[in-house]
Image (tube, rainbow, N blue to C red; front, side, top):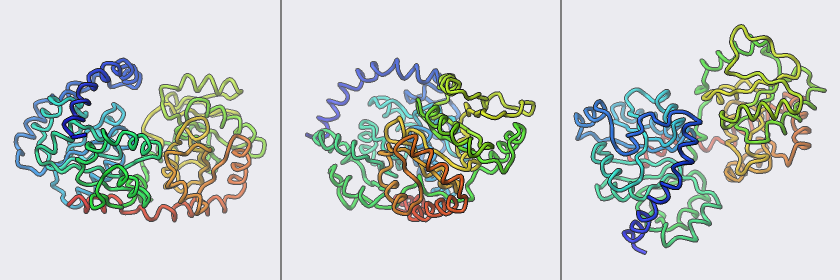
Length: 438
């Protein structure tokens, strides 16, 4: 099928999909906050300051980077820093889809980067956005390829790249079933930067020419120890001290947990307390709007819960059997650095798992559950190097946690082995920028 036919079908179905998905989007956006912030940007309408800036630099070689949400924004910021290392005057626009991604980008991006919401992929909307931004290159992070944006960019001669390209086995199977429709869309890409050797064959299987595909490693795992959020870590250490938690007290941290996992790990924590009475349990749910639900689940198994949002210098000390629930955003990386042992969420009762590398980069021993399908390639590397422990359920988790907490020397060695497994990804952001032409 030709590209124009695919776009015709897509544009016929897109308005219906947008209308059907609107209620769910609004509910989610309202829960997470920021639903109305700069809402007009989603339709390619920008305030006077942005428009004036873009008018003044109409001939600038501007780069537009698109990152969906928090995870992609973190990858995008590494690309931005690599771009600015190559050219400190580089003009960059970063778009994101979710309010949480937008807030993170506004807070963490260099001041020279213009942060916007990604326009809805309707032809007239993306045309307006492209005419105002005038990018020379568009860099898409991981998996976001919008057909109308891609088509209109190509019409204008804009280089279109997909970096840190992510393609799970499930997505590959789905795309291959519909190659008649997806092939022409993927064919618009000029460059695809992939993370692992096996990704080369996967993307070729979707019809992308081999010369367009570049193996550079994973930008997500391209992190140096000195990038640790030291200021935030110091604040959290002071918080724990105010709660009566000593610097040498062991901490079991459950990160990015999903429904039911907080209680599952909580029961394991209660068993661990028999051997490690000073052990503290900290829970950081993937979605903070679940806080009330998590409190109910933990109290139902006999734990007392203190909310991070209520903690201040006058907070009473945490008593035995207490759990600290982090119901604030943007702190997970710092909490990882303060843990003795990290259990990764969505890997027990969810599907696909969460990123195990963030706690590894913090130098911590990591345990994951059986469901890590979204991270198959990196999991293979880590398991081969004995850089983490994967368990089947609560009973195995209890045994593995006891081993880690009992033998700190072996725990430290496991964390070091994990870092060795990730060495091949160091410098991935710089390699990506070189492939893109700086």
